[in-house]
Length: 66
Image (cartoon, rainbow, N blue to C red; front, side, top):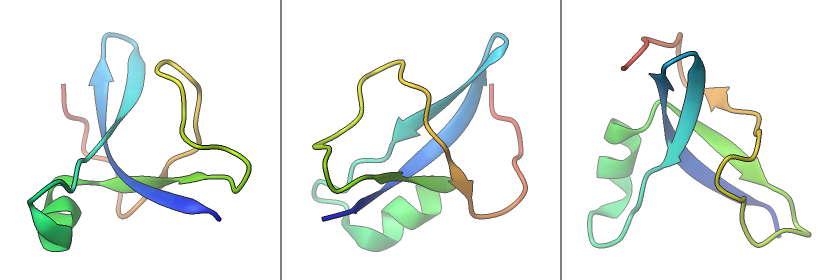
């Protein structure tokens, strides 16, 4: 099934990176506070590779975090 992963988008040099926010032991609310978007992992995938280009759905306008 499709998986939705909360991410924190930040800028590193000239690139934007989407870093997954772990929910281990911290619960749903804290992942919502730390994240500024999410990615969708298709049904036929188990995850995404580091460095892979992904489409991020932002919760709001992006405030650049460096």
